[in-house]
Every structure is written in structure tokens, then in C-alpha cells.
Length: 333
Image 1 (cartoon, rainbow, N blue to C red):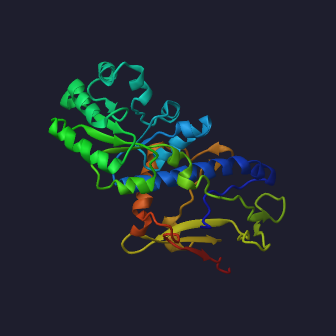
Image 2 (cartoon, helix red, strand yellow):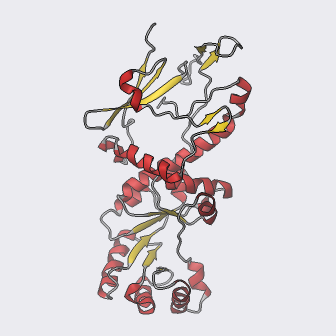
């Protein structure tokens, strides 16, 4: 809390014009990425499919896919997001596809004929046990996966795994969906589940659809002359919405083991011991984008940053921030 996520410098007219779009993007995308990070942490290495396009605005759906991918999801079912951002796309058939056919066997045979034995068959439209048997008869032990979308997922996953193994389909994976969030994913840690599909809870921030970020004027030039020094300004009214003045920098201090121990925020010169730990990087200079990078780089940076947090960062219970924020006053002279 209190650490500057983005710093914008320019004329007042230019900077204030950007306020709405910046807050719109950062509040929405960061909420989705935070939920995705919690879910991918709970998944403990198991793949996550982003499946939330039908639960949010059509434009927000593409942004949500991007944020989820950066936050640790592995694929998306949103083809527009795959096209725009080159996110790997995947999906499974729907209950409607099964209901379109006279019986489940016909549906499975049509899907396997079109997509091959490595496809994922949905097995809970009617009777799960019968569907699993039919799926293996149709696709053979090479069946890629089955999807479970209802019921007691923990119990059903164990039963399906046992049945698949008895039928010789030991390499067939199990994908579960059904309104999952990070808590449901964590509760399935001991289940024989190979991948999760997450929709509603992801694209709504798992109960926190915004990060409540704000955009504050913190410094102004003393004159209109080029290079005029900045002086801090801050809101001082009562009511919990006060702000700290000054053009800020942020750094993440680590202990001897390389684990983050504090978010250090200050104004003025950066202390030499924190010079290599700064968090802000230049994105735009004089209207030209200088900080664009592939999404996989952002994805890898997120994973590395999360791995460097204290172990308590992986706890799903509510609590205080994992690392404290420390403010460093500028040194005189």
C-alpha cells in the first residue's frame, strides 16, 4: 500500500487527461491479475484455463485474458485474446454439443472424428460413470482428457480417476470447472485433478473487481521555466484520503536470503544500497513508447517477484500486507 505503481510527468492538461484511462486499465487489469496470481499459486503448478469471457463485458473479456495470462494462467478460451496477444488458446466442448446429438456416444464420436483422440470430452451431461466408459470406448486409452463441470468435484474426481485407470486410460487427464475460485482450487490440491478452468470468479477479481488505485497530483513545478524544480503538494483533509507529497521512487529491499522484506518509498535521491532494487522503469519518453515488452517477459517477472515474497504470501486467508511499506524522507543537502 502506498507504493507508486505508475508515475506520470508532463503538463497538467496532459497528465489529467490520462487519469480516467490509466485508472480504468490499472484498476481492472490489476484486480484480474491479482486474482489470477492467487489462483495460480493455489493450483501449485497445475495448468489454469481462463474461461470468463461470458461473464464480463466483451471488451473487458480480452483485457481479462491478458491479465490472467500474466498472473499465471496458461491458456485462454477467448479467441480474440489469443489473436490479439498471442495467448495460447484452448477449450472443451459444451453440454449443448452433447445435447445436440441423439445420444452421448454420437457426440463423442463426432468430436473425436473432428479433433482426434487427444481431445477433451465433457462427461457430466447425463451420468458421469457411463460417460467415462463410453468416452474410453470411443477414443481408446489415448483419450486426452475428460472434463467435470458439476457435483462434488473432490469426490467425483477420485471416482473418475479410479475408473479411467481401471479402463486402461491412465494418461487421460482430468479437467475440472464449475465456478472455481482460489479457495476451491486449494481444496482440490489432494484431488487427482490435472487442470482447472476458471471463469466468473477470475474476471470479477474473485470478489475484488477493482484494486481501488488512485491518481494523485504529488508535485508541481515552481515556475513555467523548463527544468524548474518540483515542489511537493498533498491533500491534507481529514477522512482517510490524505496523500504524501513529492515525486516518489519505489524499491523492494531484500534480506540476506533474497526474500523481500520491505517496500521502500521515498522522495529525492535513491539511497545507493537500493539503486539496484528500484521497481519503476521508464515506459514512455516524450510521447514515444520505450518500455514495450513481450507478455511472456511480464509473466516471468511476475513469477520471479512472487517467488521472492515471504512464504506467507501464498496464504489465502485475509491479513496484513505481506511486506510493510517504509517511507524514506529526503536527506538535507
